Image (cartoon, rainbow over all chains, first blue to last red):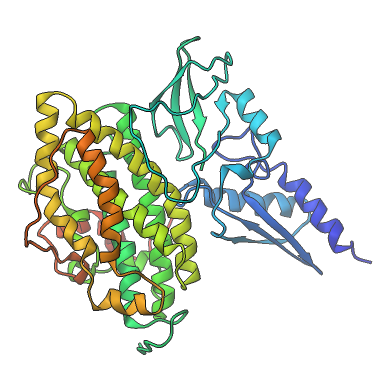
Length: 169
Length: 271
């Protein structure tokens, strides 16, 4: 007698919650919100993932680690990539945000609306990002781009520590 | 290849393929240009910024060229399209292939960061308009790529606009170089908004857009940045570059030679 498909899907989600992001290993692919769907039909298991950034070099590694983790748990899965709807940091779980902060990466704030916005440059300070080390909000952006595609580089004026900020997207 | 201009979707009219190649080639070629800054950025943060933008653009190009290959239906994948076509088969806008050392100095080896930044301003502002419009394309794969790319283009624009203002409203030297870059690159922006029969065909089916309709939105983004940077918008001239029709400047060949050398020496190389 085979396991019911809902139980297979639930088991798959459990396994996926243990698959770490290769570049920020404190969060899982589920925490990041890049696993969009798990479908179990009969013996077939299909996992749908979406990339964070279109050029993110971690995407292929993530697909491979998902397949490997599921295979180790005795689950044979196909991994499908879907672009739409486009990934947003809003899909990051609250547990994921807390893990990021504890790791020293400021979690993403509110993202820009999708509608056209009148942009103001340089002279308007962006919304304050709290320092993940001391919690201070007197911080400044050093660079729009950081060590990976998804992060910007900030500095805390209170504790003088630099830190990464996971950019809202 | 069959040409069925009544087919708006999957298997592709010649114009549909041509249009996707234009989109993919412009992002690929500019991505390659920006990647040249890797290890050569003026400061570490900018080195990282340029390569991050390059990474986004190459990622977009992979999606677009993969899609173009499928719509074409001749079995060409992203690698074959990127690495095994020659200059006349590339459909990128000429603006994207110009060297970062400036338009006039073909053989200069050191890049001018003002050229890199001003081009990114002009191009990412165009990309924002383009991707926003194409998010509603009847080609659902293109719409998905556009919606994804729009988010990235916004960051590219913000980065380029910030630096345009710092350069323009900076020292005499940085102001002069930013203005020189803007003057040199401006004539090449006309091509981005020059509607031709390919665009008319894809626009009829809701796949693409007549690029002329993007110009006002683009100008509304670019002009305030230029003004805040205390720079002067150049006046328009009759010059029209023709990269998207396959007629390129002398610079593209050098770029392709470097970009394609590994794949041409080891056909089918993958890693």
